[in-house]
Length: 148
Image 1 (cartoon, rainbow, N blue to C red):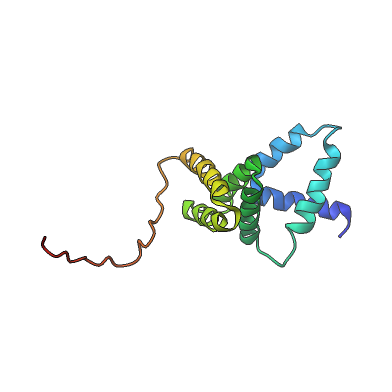
Image 2: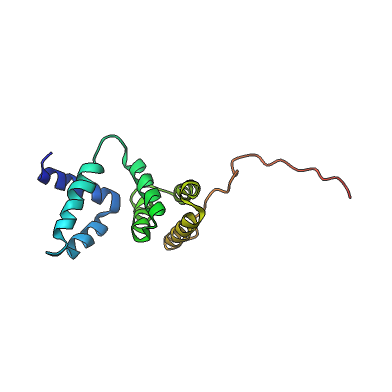
């Protein structure tokens, strides 16, 4: 693939992942100072890496959200969580599971910060998200108590 093909493929997958609105706004903000950086991202981050056949887009989204959480890159974390919910078919439960998984490997403070940000994003999407409580699919057992 040459640079022009990479650029076109990158723009296509970037629109798929982040949505047309985001990409259009980002392109409108490009200027002579930032143009080379944006071109680098289009060709390599989006055109070379996101288009590789080894992982599907959903898996790449999970990895990116988890990595951004680990690094504390909250602006990008929020952008990718919003995009996963709006464009990627992710549910509140999917986001919650990513955060819980990362809590173990990245630390509770980072996961708490991520959960707070994800909850704020979910709140802007309408009624409170319905997420399954832990063990919600299991049958509950009645506990017999002895009289005191």
